[in-house]
Length: 468
Ligand code: ADP
Ligand code: F6P
Image 1 (cartoon, rainbow, N blue to C red):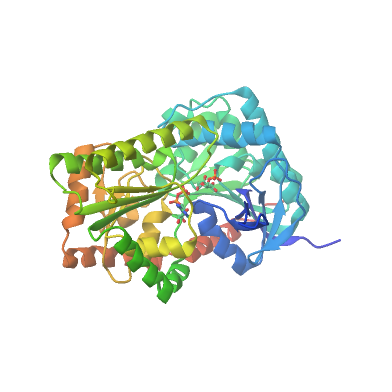
Image 2: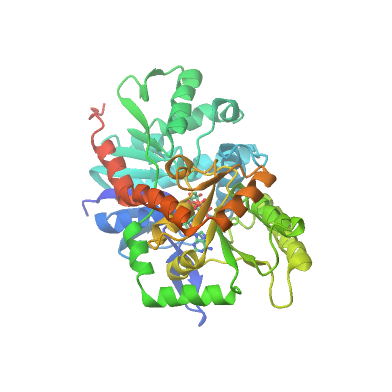
C-alpha cells in the first residue's frame, strides 16, 4: 500500500478542464479563475496531490498526472452539479458572500447536496493523504470539509483558505445553515481569509452564534485552538515576467494595438460574473461618448469575459444585459469597422492575456465586491515599462494594497467612474510611472509564492493537538 501524499490540495475543481481539440481529441487546459492561477505554481513546486472535480458531470476518471501535478478526480453527478455547484455554491453562497448583489437562493435540496458532496471530497482526501499530512482546503464550495476530514483523520493538519469575501454578521445571519458552516470551518487548524476584516467577521460570528470563546483572532475550542488570519493572495510574478519577455508576446501586443485602431486602449478581463461591475464600467465608457468627454477614435474598450457558470440564471441574465449594452453603445458611437467596444466572450491562454495587458493603456477593474482580484495584480506585474494606469474599485480585495498607485473608484458612482476613467486616460507618463512603481513594489514583494509560504508556515506552526 502506498504511503500517501504529504501535501494535498483540495478544491472544487481540478486545475485543468477537459476541452475538445479541433481534431475532436480531448485534452486538458488550465481552468479559469483566481484560485487555480494562484495555487497551481505552488503545487508543482511541492509535488503534491490535487483532489478536485474535472468540470464535467458523471465523469468517472482514474487519478492522473498533468502539467507537473498529481490529480485525483472526484465525481459529480448531473444532479450534484445542479444542486451543489450551480445551486448551493453559486446561487446561495456566492451572492450571499458578495454583499447580496444578486438575491441568494435558500433551498433545502441544494443544502443536502452541499453536505453530500463535501462528504465525498472529505472521503477522497482521507484516502490519499499520508499520515500527519498537510491538507489545504480551498474556498466556499468546501466549507464543511475541514470538520468532516478531522472526524475521519484526526492526524492531519488542516488549513482552509477562503478566496472570496466573508460577509459581515448582518448578511451571514440570513443563511439557514449558518451554524453548520461555522462548525465546518472550525475543523481546520488555520482558517485563512483575504483581508483582516473577513477574519474578524468569522471570529465575531463564532462568538455570537456558537458561543465560542475567542481571544483576538483565535477561536478557543475545548481540545484545540483555531486561528483565523488574513493572507492576501497574489500572482506568479516570475511566470508573468517570463511571458512578457518573449518577443512573440511583445509582437502580439503591438498587433493588438494596431487592430484596435490607434486610440487609447482600455481593457477589462474578467469571468463573466455580476460581481465584476462590467455593466457599470461599460455604461460609464458609453456615457463619455454621449457627453463629449471622448470622441470615437480617441479611445476603445476591449472587454474580455470568460464564460462562467452558464447555467445559473443570474449569469444568463447578465450575459444578455452585456450583449445588449455593447450592441447599443456600438450602434450609437461606433463606425463601420471601428466599434468603440470590442467584446469577446471567451477564454485566452496566458500568452494572449500577457499581450493584452501589455497592449492596454488603462486597465479597468471595477468589481462591486471581490475577494482579491488577481487581474489587477497581473496587470501591474506585467508593466515593467511603468506605462499604463489601473482603475480599481474600492470594493476589490486588492484595494488596500494598490490604492496608493491606482485610480480608485466607487463603481456604483457612474459619474465618479467616468471622471476617474478620464483621469487615467489623460494621466501623463511621469504620473503613470510614479503610480506603477508603487504598485509594482507591493506586488513583486508579495507574490503568490510568499502568500503560499506564509499560509503554510502559519499552518505548520499551529500548536500540535493530541488526537483523542
Ligand atoms: P475570479 O477568481 O473571481 O475569477 P480573479 O481576478 O481573482 O477573479 O482571477 C481571475 C483569473 O482568471 C486571473 O488569473 C485571470 O488571468 C484569469 N482570467 C480571467 N479572464 C480570463 C480570460 N478571458 N481568459 C483566460 N484567463 C482569464
Ligand atoms: O476564486 C473564486 C472561484 O470561485 C474559485 O473557487 C473558482 O475556481 C473560480 O472562481 C472559477 O469559478 P468556477 O469554478 O465556478 O468556474
